Image 1 (cartoon, rainbow, N blue to C red):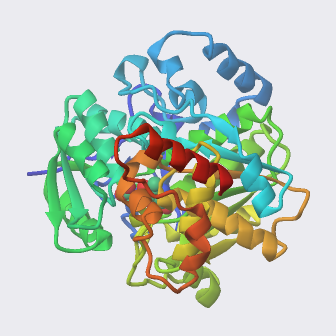
Image 2: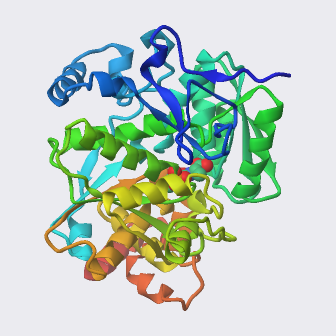
Image 3: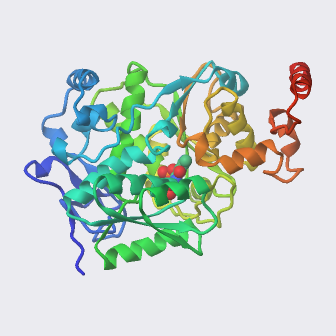
Length: 452
Ligand code: F0G
């Protein structure tokens, strides 16, 4: 069966095009693998029209502000509200679950722990399916449907599949999910099932699933919704627009994100550079990427090759969302780290577990992969990269409820083997207490807890 090609849309077709990140070749259409036909590198979306008539910063800011008072579906979406900087679609074509519009919380206890004056969390786990993936999925699913696809597909560590399945269902498309068997949380798997995806648990890891998907999309008319798809990154860009709007357009000194397949860091970095070029902000925050030390392909790529050649790893971490050894967007991420002057570091399993408990203790909560950001911040402060007077934003990518097993095992002391520094976690644990159903037993527990 021939695959439809993914072309830039309709009447205002020229508003965006695809550019190869390797050879800079520009095209108006992309093949299904979203790779350059000449050099096979990844594509990104660019907007040549901005060169002729740049949208003015004040015009953009007031349009975005005004849309907050509107009740039109495209304005209620925290992604499409910023549509002036996205590929154009007609409003009635948008597949939306009212994604975006996520809160920016101040974390005062974590700030004290990390040693910075002001620390914020941009909580993408508050999206409709519980992760940042929804902001990209609304755009990419919309373009899948526009291009006439009946099927969408992804490889996933869980969140992409949950999000894709939801948006496909909303748009009346079928979805095919490839996940590594036994390596994703039940919560995420249950979402894909509930939203009606054909869900395949493959006996491999995420990288194996993604490799297979790449071959599949060249053979069958299914539209791939991994973050190799540049429409995904355009949607995920809006996190940065929304964040800066929430900060009254005063850029923080640092933004810290977890790194897995490296689409999100690439998207946020792209948005920061675009905002600077359009005059929306006067200076770039430093964008830093943190990985688990057992899944540290980008850290090694930068340290060992100066960001020139990917160093793949055999990934292992309890933060299963980022258990990835061969990240597709490594080149884009290395580029935005360099462009913004950010850093790339790795943190241990104990540091991730501790940071997650500390974020939870502020009443916020997140999934393990998100907690690498706080662990990474502590390290960046220690290294002197984050200075004591600087403002920092952590991007929390997933909701606490995405991986309840991790949290329960942590509190029961079953998550990590004793040793490896796990003893330091004991004061943070609150294991559930089984009691006889008597007032006396509960009173004694209350008194004991008051003293501890
Ligand atoms: N945090 C969470 C909660 C994630 O689910 C992911 C990626 C990341 C961070 C890393 O983001 O890949 O853009 O660098 N999850 C993908 C998935 C791979 O399939 O759900 P990234």
